[in-house]
Image (cartoon, rainbow, N blue to C red; front, side):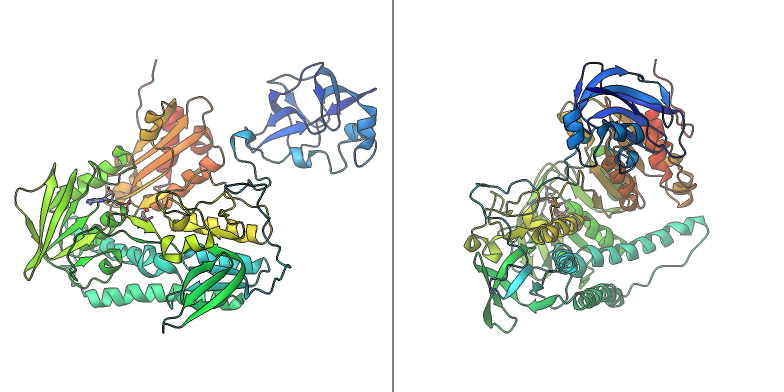
Length: 614
Ligand code: NAD
């Protein structure tokens, strides 16, 4: 054995860098690449690895030491044989001079401080069921005479993303969609059109609110037909764009409603009723979900779901929204702004179940003051369709004594996955008890050459989850080792004010007995918020009391949905309160409220007075 001095590799412009961890002590046996020490600059945390196997003879640094390029870290009794067998030759020389790749290249990468806490991007985990018995995904070149190398069912955000990514990776892709425009529910009758109408609602409200501040435009003259035409134009621009993108990528679009005939074949019913078969090598099922119906309701055009609500066919005097979740409250925001007296009935005792109460409170306060009624812990027991209106009977905590008459009833009580509608059982796909297709982290179902993504593959039923899953499935189908390892998926209600949350909620933290530190910033202290004519709003950050890392965040206020992305990134990047608070946020913006909440948690906030805890 020979002694090898392992020194700090080239640190570039950095000098006197802090040693924050020493992973070894004299006598430790090391393999090549075992971490010796961790260095931390204000930009990154980096491990310096052992250049070769050996036994530690002495350690020259300790936690708190400051080191620069070339400083001694450890002396190693090198294992000659192992050292020689290392690619690149002489281990001792490598240790002196740094490895052939420059020594610091891998070590200088910014690493999460506890990589094991995060799911590693490694070989894909096994699909559910008997992994050993399962064949691997068919490689692209294995043309087995099928009609399609990859077929994607459903052209919503998940499906078109999967199709486009797969095409970009060189697969021949067929995209089957029952409706003429691509884009699915999100683009055609969901996220996009509702946001266009919500923008109109906001303009109406803001101009009304400015009246008492010296800016009076008079009563808005609302032309619902024109509004709907504008909304449809927004949608068309996007769906036309998708058709172009599909063409540019040579994605074959087949119009029709697909069902599995077998694990290798679809039956596609075209709009004129003609049926044909399409065999495939691999399939990505992205068939989404549909609005859940309430049983026992009369067939009446005045009872609508979220799709019907976007048509603005009627603006009656009174309207009932059944379901105080995201869809119900977003559409209530639109109809309220358009002058309809809105009532909301919600089965549970809270609006937006699953979101922290302190975040929902500002929304609830605002809408309680505006809407005709908010009935919590209450359900509808009967709806009678009469010529002069829909007569609704209620039961529960806030039920009115008498049945109420409404001109319109919106049913927004959740969505159901479309697994059964595509004949998933004929392909042999395993479904869970709620009808979601079971998938692994590569979005692979129990039938290995079939993937499932988006709403059909489990909650949360959100477009942005579907798009990420779509990319993973496409990459896996193309033979890559991608898997879905997002830690968090943000949720947003685009109400007024918006409510957004990501990661751990405070209610979950309490239920799990987690030790957390909270930083909050009330928007009544935000200059930007006041300048927008608002005083409501709150930003809340939850940090792990032990590691200091951000675990969850919630925001309620104007544009909360845009702001929450920073918190999602901070969670993915293992940020603590200092990382966020010391990041310079532009002033005056609502984004500052995130930095202020972090400062509140770190005890450094000056924009509020928080008495010191003793
Ligand atoms: P939801 O699950 O968010 O809300 C449905 C609500 O209806 C719940 O609060 C539930 O308690 C209540 N409810 C159920 N049965 C009821 C009954 N009989 N009477 C009264 N209340 C009843 O569902 P949603 O609002 O329909 O949305 C469906 C899905 O679409 C959700 O997954 C949602 O996240 C997603 N979505 C998201 C967005 C967005 O990201 N902004 C917008 C629209 C929809």
